[in-house]
Amino acid sequence: MLSTLKILWSSLGMALSELRVNKLRTFLSLLGITIGIFCIIAVLTVTDSMESSIRKDLKSMGTNVIYLQKWPWDGDGDWWKYVGRPEPQYSEMKLIKDKVASADAVTYLFSSGGRKIEYGIDYMENVELLAVTMDLEKMQSVDIAMGRYFSPSELIAGSNVIVLGANVWEGLFFTAEAALGKVVRFAGRNCKVVGVLKKKGDSMLGGVFGDNTILMPYLFARTIIDERRFADPFYMIRAKEGVAVGQLKDDLTGAMRAIHRLKPGQDNDFALNEITTAQDELESIFGVINLGGWIIAGFALIVGGFGIANIMFVTVKERTNIIGLKKAIGARPGIILLEFLFEAVMLCMIGGGLGLLMVYGSAKLAQNMFSGFEIALSTGNIILGLSISAIVGVLAGFIPAFSASRLNPVVAIRSN
Image 1 (cartoon, rainbow, N blue to C red):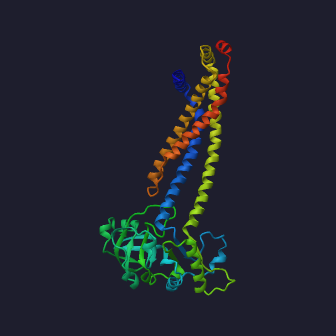
Image 2 (image 1 turned 45 degrees about the horizontal axis):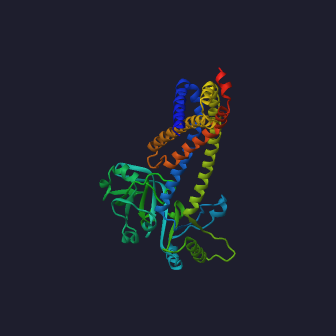
Image 3 (image 1 turned 45 degrees about the vertical axis):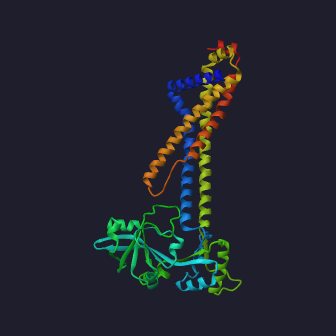
């Protein structure tokens, strides 16, 4: 065992010496492995980060919530099929609450983008308005940085109060403290700022609202914007604890068909969307991206494997007389085989390590460019990258190593 370790240590020294002496040859041989590992680990790192962001968004939005809307999320692209559907109406809220016993929270909302908000001579454009009713905070995380959320009396009365998203209060007031209590103008109407939201950052699903959104009681917002013409109204309905989303969906289907007075043979004129639908579609997209990364990486690794095999054949040729001497003094074929396999694996591990360093640097650069989206090289992907490198090293180095182990010591010693 000790002699084997000594031989492997000696092999390591010779391999490192070869790297120093033949820098260009080594670089070109390792390039394929480096590119291959970079491709697959970079793709996996991005998709893993995206999936982590999605899970985080789903947790904040709730997986037991149904979105009652005009348009389905998984529509077949037939615009004419859905355009004639009626928009969800605020007047249906009480009927939904009365008819759907499996729901414990119902909220009606509408959003409208491209709006302008002003404070004094300062203003911001392309702000999104989200008009809200009761129970929103039960289904969507409303993280108040300072101040407060709307009181029930303000929502019921339609008071002219407003909660500002992070980008809005930063743009108009710079600090959260300065925003509280101020009166801003939105669509020509005065609104008092009662709260400001924490920064959410970028996300895959986005949630119901983001940093460029302002929140306003629905009954006040409807006096500014006609949601039937200039907005996208929808309901969020949450299932009671212990009630499956499927049951809630069935109950909602029956209730909405009754509210809309649809006959048994008629199709639904509404859509019941689930967060899991968007998740499944995104995960299928990630699967295709991962497959593409594996295909690109596969070609690069094949080229890199041939490069490693080539450099190992050259190494065997250069050390033929040394191999003969080792076998003459008692080195077994298995030791010779292991020695060259070890060199091939080490070369591939170096190439894989360089690829991982490139992924790490790219992830840090992307993190700085997209601060709201976390991209990190995980330990699992590091282990995967090094494991792939080791496997490629074994496959690429086996034939040269086997040929070295089968050399006749007398013939090998006489070679030049």
